[in-house]
Image (cartoon, rainbow, N blue to C red; front, side, top):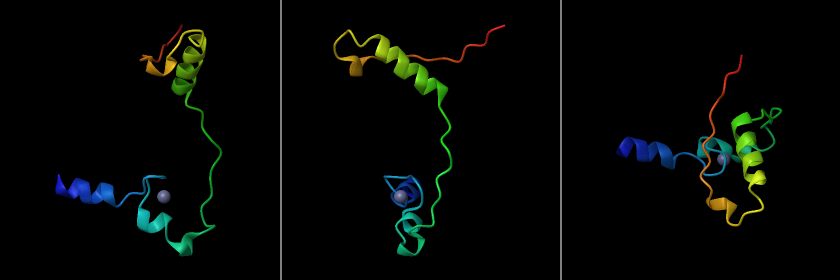
Length: 71
Ligand SMILES: [Zn+2]
């Protein structure tokens, strides 16, 4: 467990990468962001939450989203 803690402490809380790399001034301006990929599961959860917007406290809803195969 100590090794896991040491590993987790070496990661950046913002990007999840090695903190020694992403905070290195030598790397400023060297990162490139690829086009986004949509998470269809999260999209479905957001849409479902919007459908429940007429109710209060939607942040407390526990949504269950599953992959459905058709055909
Ligand atoms: Zn970072």
